[in-house]
Image 1 (cartoon, each protein chain N blue to C red):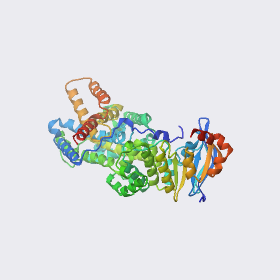
Image 2 (image 1 turned 90 degrees about the vertical axis):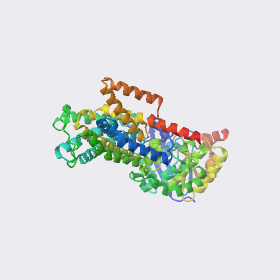
Image 3 (image 1 turned 90 degrees about the horizontal axis):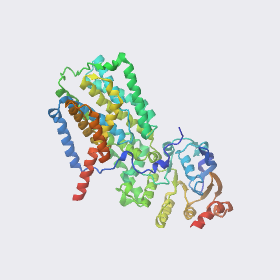
Image 4 (image 1 turned 45 degrees about the vertical axis):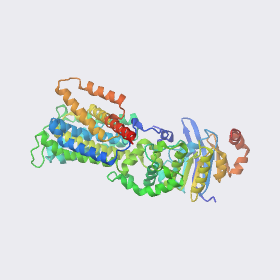
Length: 253
Length: 337
């Protein structure tokens, strides 16, 4: 299942005014795999995400996408190269409808967005594909709803539809099931299982049952460093992980 | 400067800036009716007002729409748009005086000069947001003001640029009444351009950037370049207004570059309604008319009245005149349904 490393990091480090949030992290995300990043709060998972997507510049180290050095590229260029992300805290355009969100994502690589002298009706060319993607995430009936009016779980689904609209090589999902009820969690897991076909997925996830169901490889972070990395069963059984994270999580659930 | 770019924590703010609240678009027939009324009023205006005042309203309408393009549709508050209005006024005046081009071409030259000036200013300003963006634009506008003040051999400094001709292929336009109708098509073209920009694929991206820049970047949109493009387009439209203003007054004073001119443009937009486009036109008409009326009735403290109205609108009608009326109409229509 796992092929060559599509996305990799070497010695990745990020300091925030003396605090080292990500500390010398090596990461290899194999092509066509689902790679989970887990760890207690403050372990540096989201910072690592922001580094991988260009939202933060590394203080040190190097990031490669399919062998190409992408260290320090701005987020829009990383996105153009095929890395799409969702945000931990739902991040949408409150005034746009669900369909407009997806259309905006579909339009992005085309250059149509620069045409200030053309009618916005031209974006109608994306309606069909947008509706397909919305149907895929279970939002077919809500295409016209402004995103601000969507319930929380629906917003998360819309996040996913937008990311998929970019047809990314690598999909980075920041806590895709955070704050969801059991039913929504199941639906999201099933959805990610479907969209991972032909794609590489990196996800930050707290819910260990979700990780167990989806992930091929799990990297456990603690205090900004890689603690353990390996297949889920192996990581789960690891002493260090149990003390650092899983033990706490199991006790909590 | 930190090397952090719009971090996703910023993106979690789901409320758009400047208190904007979406108002659903009116049905088609309402919009066409409003357009017809607007055109009728524009065609009648110099018959009901002093033609010189009507000319000023047209110029300020362009200026307001240019500012709203940034403030309302890109989420950038420029506090230095006098730089573009004024630069175009001077360039238009100089071209009309020294080259003797027909005034529409002189105005075009002025507007292009404003757009060119908007490139470096915008390039540096769009890297900032909020109050810092406003400060950068203000600082550059002040620089332009001082340059114009010191460069007396060209601008005549405090004396102002006198005798800007209203030449257009030998047609006599000295009467403000006829001049109004000569510039009306240019102004309508400028307003139509602004409308097109807002309702273009580009305009959609701008709104996305306004509401959630981090998300727009994650979608692959180069946010700075979009903002810069909007800034330059806005500079051009403001320049169109400023150039016509110079020809309209046949005189360019340093006032066109003064920071109070930038402030007045913002006030006009806020009064009319941020992010409504036509609200700016309405605001321009009201402010210009009111100032003229107050100055003719010998009232000294004009700023006190316009400032007072401004405060009232900001406190009581955050959506401005156009925005409040649109919201009210929408609510009434919804109740009837």
